[in-house]
Every structure is written in C-alpha cells, then in structure tokens.
Image 1 (cartoon, rainbow, N blue to C red):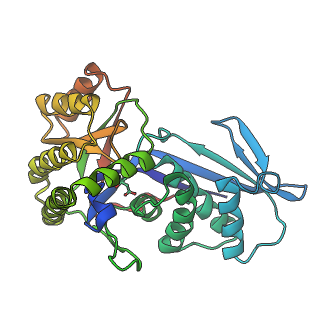
Image 2 (cartoon, rainbow, N blue to C red):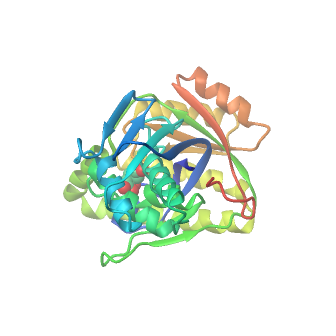
Image 3 (tube, protein in one colour):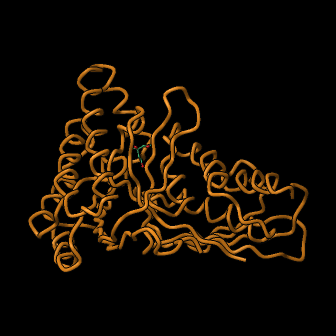
Length: 320
Ligand code: MEV
C-alpha cells in the first residue's frame, strides 16, 4: 500500500507568517515523497530509506523523529500494539532546500499507514501529526509546510494570535500557471534564519513589524488575483515581497543574482522562497517564457532548476 505527498514552495508571506500575517504556499507536484507500507514476517516495524541507505527498527531508535511519528500514527489509527511492518520511504524532493522534503516524507508516511489500515485520513489530522514531527527540526515552525503538503493544494495560512488552531483555507485557483524554482545549492536551516530574524526584530520592533504588515498586504492582494484569474498580475507583488525580505535581512547575493537573472529572462516576478539565507527562489513566467527563465537560472549558477505547473481548482487531487 503506498501514498505520496508533493513538495511545496511558499509563494509569498514567509517570515511574516511567523508573526501572525497570512502566507500562501503551493504544492510542487513535479517532485514527491512516497511511502510504501507492507507487512513482514517477523515482528517489529522497520523503516527503510533507500535514498539514504538506512534501515532501522523503530524500537531500536525510538527517538528518531520518523520512529516517533510512526508510533504516534499507529496509536492514532488504533493499532498501537506491536506490528510487523516495513515502511519504505523514497523522495525526489531536494533535501533541506525549503521545498518541504521532511514534511512531505512525514505526510506520505502517515497517509501510507492510514491506507494500509484502510483509513483515508483527513488532511487536518495528517497535518497535525506531521507538525509534531517537524517541530523536531524547526523548533517552532508556523505550521504552513505541514499544511500544504498534507492538503496537497494551494493554501492560505494564518496563525491565530491566541495560539488556537491556524486558519487554513485551500485556495481554488482560477487558472493554472507555471513556476520556475531555482536552488542556490546553499543550505540554511530554517530554525537559524527564523531565529536570526527574531533577534534582529528585538532591536527594531517597529521597523520589522511594519515590514511584516506590508508583506501581509501584498499576500492579500496576491490572493485576490489568484482567485479572480488575474495571475499575470501577481509578478510585481512577488518582486515587492522579495524587496521586503531583503529588508529583513534574509536574502543573500546568490539569491539576489538568481532573482535578477529570472526577471531579465522574462519572468513576470521573482523572489526568494522559504527561510532564505540560501535555499531557493521562485519565478512566475508564462508557459512560453519558462524554458528561457530556467536556462537563465542555470547560467546564473543555480545548482538545480525545477519547473512546475500550479494547477487550477478542479484539476484533481495531487495526492495519490
Ligand atoms: C519556512 O518554510 C517558512 C518560514 O516562514 C518559517 C515558518 O513559517 O515556519 C520562514
């Protein structure tokens, strides 16, 4: 029995989302994580990760976040007693690049276990289980990554100020559009960039809060354009969002170089995506211009380029 979860990018609103402003994230369906769950003859639940060449019994490494997630999921499914399972986890999502590889592997694992026990799990429940697991890597993540990969659809995400459940709204896009993603190949753990922003904000709370609010406003306008079929009009707002992210200190020369190269090659808008400090950027382009944007990103030094289509509502689920 197997299940998948897509990669993701944050289209707009990263960092500000940690402080209660909205953000939009979209699935990247050209890459995915997959979990295959099978019974095995001997007792014990084994996790196998062929990409990393690792294999372990969850009882032997109970503190491993995937062991903990497996146990928690089995308990949630009402199968907490000893099982005899082999869970194989594979992924084509670049690791630690801001494309949600850890969250997608976790979501595929939870959905795969659900399917094995004939339970089609609600995305909100999958997302909650994945969030617990993500905390191990990210400290206090906003919850946007686990949400988008668990729903497998573009989402609007906003933390609630009082610590209650976040507002998560799947966004029914009026039209499909093309995203070109460029990876700097440089790794910057999200918890470090989020921590550095928090630190800088303590020295200039007003300045930072004004930037976060401006990002939130751009996100709200982008949402309207996505829902009304004015996708071509989101480009300048993405450019503006990049500018604000530069101002809060999370862009780098490498990210800026890729952003400029994408714009020069005909992208309608470009910005860094995710935590910054390295990692990835994204550009919107009409389908005809996307190959030229991809070429320009490679020429400007991108370690990897991914072109993906963000599907309009009604195109069917990306979760298989
Ligand atoms: C990381 O993908 C996005 C950030 O906004 C952090 C978070 O939302 O947890 C930088």
